[in-house]
Length: 314
Image 1 (cartoon, one colour):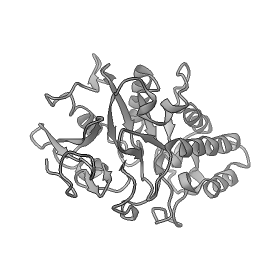
Image 2: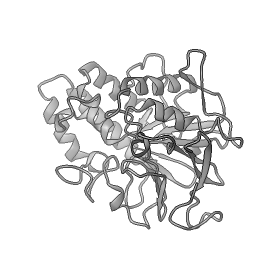
Image 3: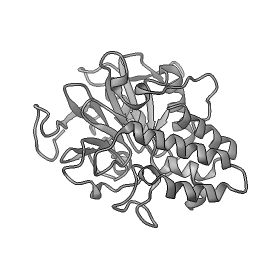
């Protein structure tokens, strides 16, 4: 998964962990839970191109494939790139291509529970899915992506933190990212050896803040940042943009926004969305049924702008 690692540089330190580690003030665009639905992901990412107030973050190239558009953005894929849809391999190739074109400081993948399926396949019965059927070489390449800082547990924005499932209490993205690197190191050393399965189970126990399931089937109140259900994030949780739990539209609870909308909208026109953060604002761009783009205000309590209601309208 994301196995084209040759020639791609490592990003570490502040630039790995947060937009504040970059020069200037690039706009952050995030999309979560693509789950192999490439067409819906394209529609969501192209909402910026189709709205007059935004420059494109990606654009179709001569061959029709999405290319980095070269503008001042950071693009966060907020976990669960794969499984369920028919195009997991093409989604992974798209993300790898954008990362290569934009550079590792500009594209980040947060570690979701289906990315966890690549590292710990023996814990889950996902052999029929993309994540659970990776070869030892592909799993090692994914470990290299984690070590290179391309795949992280969390990424700091201007007023929110991006994580696939989030945490109920304050946390430091850098600390969680270091834990993910350590876990990947433990797992990578055992891939393809007789110790592989045991290392997977040991890592889940050793790194609960990142890999914890919160119960036998996952998603429980004690789950880590890749697994926690939105229901267990209280209204006073730290400001975060998360995915993982399905909604029909970007949904805010207190200072947490859940952006996981693709699967709930995949069977009809419209509904795909990205979240866009600048130092001054947080909005969702939502694809409408007629192909247009609506703007949903997501300003958080205390931000000094926008509504403090639980959700905005498109």
